[in-house]
Length: 214
Ligand SMILES: O=C(O)c1ccccc1N[C@@H]1O[C@H](COP(=O)(O)O)[C@@H](O)[C@H]1O
Image (cartoon, rainbow, N blue to C red):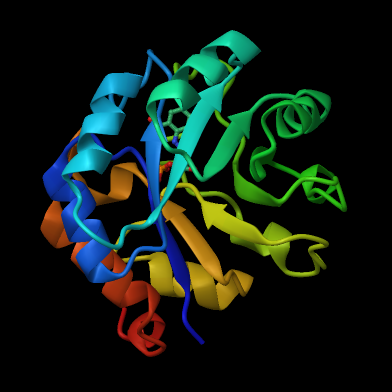
C-alpha cells in the first residue's frame, strides 16, 4: 500500500521540485498572513510556473478567508483543492461557491471531534491548537493517535500534526492513515523547507519496517 503525502507550506521552487521528485501527491500553499509559510498568490503562481511537466496537485490553505480573498487567489493560482480552516457550514459554502474539492481541517482533542459524512471531499485530522497559539495548525504538535483507533471514517482523510521523518511510520501504523500531511517537520527553519527532510519523510512514510526501527 502506498501512503499518499502532502508537503504543506511550500515557499520556493526548489522545495516543490524536491517534493515532486520524491513522489508527493499534494503540494500545499499557505495563504494565511500570520504563517511563516505565507505566500501571496503571485508567489505561489510563480513557484508553480517554474515546475515543468507533471506536478503534484496544488492545495490552497485558507484560514477564515472570505469569498473575495479565495476568488482573487484562484484568479492567479491554478489550485486543485482547497484546505479550509473554518466552520463546517462555511466549508460547505466554499465548496458550492467555487466548485473545487474542499478538505476541512478538523481539530481533534476528543473522539467526539472526529467528523462523519459531512458532504465535503475529505478531512485533515490534526491536534487542536492551544487557545493562545498564533496559528490553528502548522505548530509541530502531535495529536493523540489513540483517539483514531476505533474511528470508522466516512470520507477520505489525512493525518497531520507534528509528523517528522522519525515518527511518520509509527503514526501510520498506530492510526491506519493512508495519507499524511506535514509542514514544520520537513523544515530547517520556520518557512524554509529542507529537500533532504522532504525526501526522508516520503521514504519513511512508505517504508513498512520504519516503525520497527525506532
Ligand atoms: O503550515 C502552516 O503554517 C499553517 C498555518 C495555519 C494553519 C495550518 C497550517 N499548517 C497545517 O497544519 C498541519 C500540521 O502542520 P505541522 O506538520 O504540525 O507543522 C498541516 O495540515 C499543515 O497543512
